Image 1 (spheres, rainbow, N blue to C red):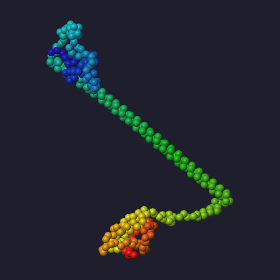
Image 2: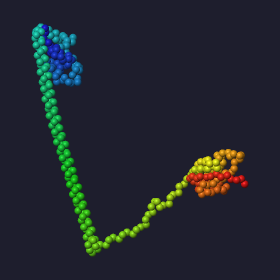
Image 3: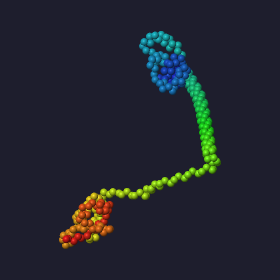
Image 4: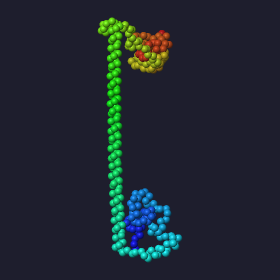
Length: 297
């Protein structure tokens, strides 16, 4: 059995054919180890499985084109005659060595990634410590500025109190000099004369409210009553007309003219009052009227 080519060995190890061809082409067909190194380094690349645009030729184990066969015919046949033949055991041994090489490359890669992860963790911790220290310095600066601000405000407050005390002392000295004695001997200030006491709101006369309607209750001779709302400027004749229209039929025939009386104080309204508005007669906002029979003249 013929010896495995580099492409076949990589495929035997489990690498995809397209990826193995690409690794061999990009490493210049320098052998399985170089191709394996490339495959390990670029295993996570997003375009690792994309095929190459240029033809890979006989380097990747593909058959040469018809134009290439003429130039490679003599050398290819000579190389084929001298190519060693491997037994099944030798082929298995070669595959085993390749797998061990793959495992070694994988371990080396994992160790390298672990070292890189440890280095990244150390950098992260170092940056965290630097950030914490910077934050602590910032807090200390803020506390120091706040303490200085409090000291400055306290000094200004003490200075203001001192100025007030000095002014009080100067005022005392000026009063003592003005009145020729101690401050306690100066005459008391004159009491202010009492001014006119403003009248309280309760003492003001109440404002008379204007009503535009009034509620009239009319008591009829039979004990019943009528209630109606009228405008305040309507004449009393409108109330009499309302009563005459709604008092009902009396037994015995015709209806007597209506005579209106006020409840209290007792007052009989005349024909002249019938032409006067309810507002002028004092019947707003409400009143009770009594109907009395008017004897015909």
